[in-house]
Length: 114
Image (tube, rainbow, N blue to C red; front, side):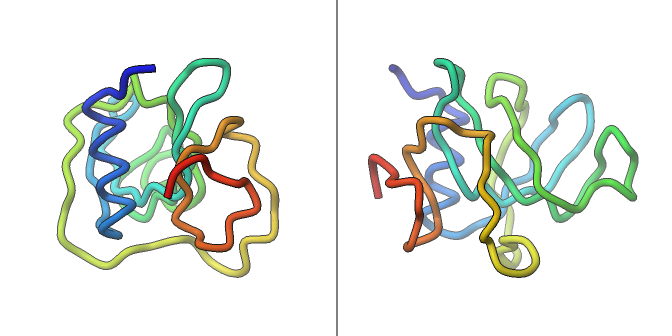
């Protein structure tokens, strides 16, 4: 499966622990991609959104989001601290079925690549 420009950018952001700004669902978002891969052949990312807007407005902008990469526009890395969400990460995710990359070095998902 060929990697899109967005996929490669998110993969690089994960490797460098750099946040990303993008447009998703007509809203500007500031995110840190945590898990990257595919579900049903569709490229997806589990991200922690720490800034920008969401469909619930600015109040709903912080938190875990499951993004379909083909819907991301104008993605670029930005300067600033990495955000990986509050608290321990013991809850299982269902966003990405076939995990290729995970920033967690102790990933329970057995990512195919590091």
